Image 1 (cartoon, helix red, strand yellow):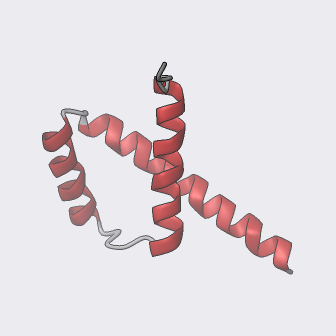
Image 2: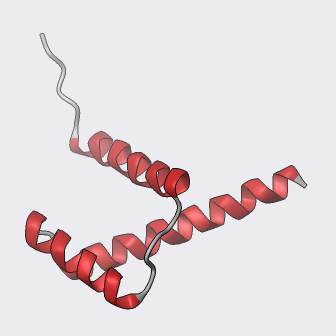
Length: 76
């Protein structure tokens, strides 16, 4: 019998993928017009609200930056 992955675990994996992408490739195009355009395009393609994408992005960027500084401190 095939086991189904629950929504919570799928979300955890998706979050890990997003954070890894940011860590590996850095943050590009952080000017407000690029961010607004990207969020608008994502919102239209996925049906997820711009507000939710903005909130998610703020949280993820802050987590990645915080974790990067924590790793740098450990190396010192």
